[in-house]
Length: 232
Image 1 (cartoon, rainbow, N blue to C red):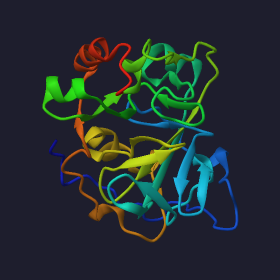
Image 2: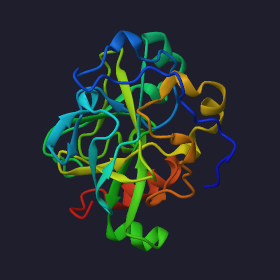
Image 3: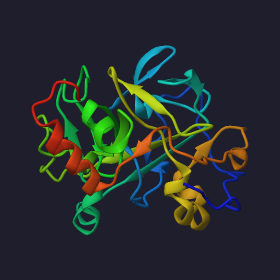
Image 4: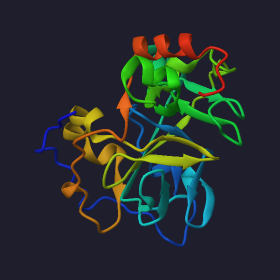
């Protein structure tokens, strides 16, 4: 998916994380909801130092990638979601993945637009590749995956890497932030959601996703085929 190469991703004069403080002050984090891939606070992310809750990560940490071993985390975004936000944007509601639903060893929670990694012979039959990315919201009803109905306002995080990657979470895989999903938000409010150290994130250009991405309809077709199949 091509993206606007003129996106102003420079974060000059933006406050950075203090390496001596984990986690950062949530009161300084962005408050603007984004309808893009995001990971709920508390989610374990696999690093070269072991699994860490996503809110403890800092730019410069090394994140486990399915394709590239450990890769540097370049920037972190975060935003709060209110009950009203979830009413207006249902895709912001947390989707809960019980243990084992996508190979995960602990429960995982993502926003509805966050894409998770699936592999299936049925994906190969339908789309010509066994490995695909599907929106979390489209997984609801499959293998016990459900939408969190408690309406507790979530805090979401986004992880920006040099390229779009499949990142490890409790033995499962989901996506890092894909800049092709956020050209408008980034152009209008670059400092609302992104934080970085002295690395110039303006040089990052994502030209393609780590795997073929499915839309809601395509995901439903796949899940109908995968129903009861152990190859998911």
